[in-house]
Structure formats: C-alpha cells, structure tokens
Length: 326
Image (cartoon, rainbow, N blue to C red; front, side):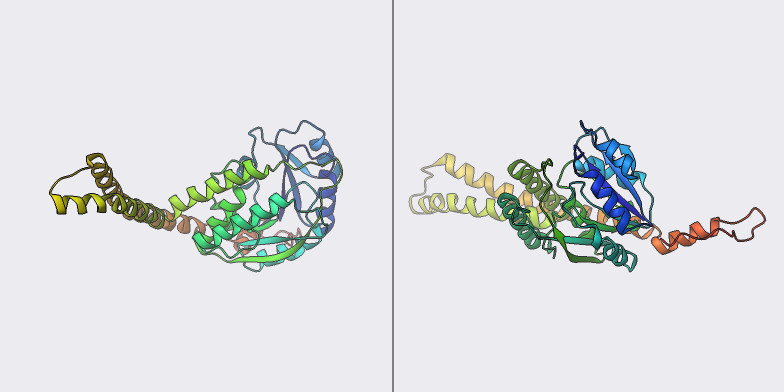
C-alpha cells in the first residue's frame, strides 16, 4: 500500500501530513514527490519518515504521472500535502479499494467556516454539475484531492493533464472504463497558518473547464460535434431563410454575402456530423484498447499472490518470511 503526496512549498504542513498518515496506515509506505519546492518541504518530509522524490516539471499533473509510473503498490492513497484532509479516514478508503472499488473519492465536508473559499466552492459546484450533465459522472466533489485508487486503474491511466485538472481526468478515465467508483464523505479543514493555496480560482478554473471540453471532444466526439453541427445549422437556417424567401418571391438574390455565409455554415454543419461519426468509431476503438490494458493488469490480490510465489528458497521450498498484509 502506498500513500502518494504531491508537494510544492508546503514546509509548514508536510511533516504533519506524513506523520498523520503514518499513524493511520502504519503498514503503508509514504511517498512525497517534491515539485521544485523553494523551502524546506523535502527535508521536513524526510525527517517525518517519508520517501522523498523530486519532479522538476511544474504542475500537479506532471507529479501524478511520475507517481503512478514509479510507485508499485496494490492500493494507492492520493492526498494533497496541505494538511486539510483527515488521515483517520484513510483506513476506510484503503478497505474500499481492496474490497474491489477501483476509485474511491473522498468528498470534502468543511469543518471550519473558512475551509472553502467562496470562489472555490462556486467553481466546484459549476464544474461538478457540468461533468454530471456531459458525462453522467455521479460524484459530488470531483475536484477533491483525496482519493483511493486500485492498481489496475493507476497502471492503465494515461495521464495527459499537467496541472490541477488531473482530478477531473482521473474521474473521467474511471467512468470511460465503467469500473467501480465509490464516494464517501471526509472532514475538510482550513489550511494551517503559514500555508498558502497554489490553486488559482479563475486561472485553474478555466484550465479545468478547457480540460472538460477537451475530454468531451476526445471521449464523446459524436455528442460534441453533433452539438456544434446543430448550432451551425440553426444559424445557417436563420440567415438563409430570408434570402430564400426573397429569391422565391422576386427571383433574385438581394444579399449575396449572406447567402454565401448561410451556405457555408450548412456545409460546415454537415462536416461536423461526418467528423463526429468518424471520430466516434476511433474513440470506441481507443476505449476498447484502454479496457484491454485495464484487464491485462493484475489486481491487488493477484499481484500479492505473484509476489508471494516468488518468495521461495532456491530449492523451491516456501520462504519462512512472513508475508506483508497489503
């Protein structure tokens, strides 16, 4: 079992995070991936007992990509290093993952009045509602940084995002694979004094919105391009009907530029429908490839069984060493 903590300039909180999860999950290995911190975050994490690794490329998405690539475990607990999430719920998250859920999302329940900034709360609701409507994603707090993941989900996840939109991408990946997704509530507290949020309400909100549009374009191209085609077709009809009416009545085209524009929009609308149909076939093939990659990865139980079978003496007799419980 591995606890993965992305970290950048969190010297005021990272030690408490590592110690809290070490106490809650004594059987887990805690990894802190330092993302170019300019303070003593790496030293504090090492002193608290974590394995610290460095990721020079800025951005949470880049850090998560390295985490999922470098760390091998049966169960992954992903949590931010700002000491706002409660480690005491980690055993329940791990139990749900080991019980068969591939993604466990910990929805934040504020315990302090100032835990959520108004802009962050509004953005979370807007983006969460948008994901529910576009993808049918039934998560109340998709932007939570506290998640549990199975080995299969992690090792089949092609991380594309570079920043805070990684949470959205991970949830959509689980939805597209149609795997078991579970959400539970967890306390969420205010950042301690001396700690500052790296999330920009508007800048990162726009990045997440662009990521959702991109995921819609790649994941559901038929719906995306059909919607665009309908919009273009309606605009073309609104421009073209007056021109056509005038031509029928007087047998002349009084506004040639408008007629050309209307015709062009209708052609673009037809191309959008054709593009959506072609890309839908490609998207289906890519989804099948992801599913095969997911199914080709041994789950936690099989992985532990393979590890146990390899722990034998040269003569083939079982090793007397005790097996790890996770």
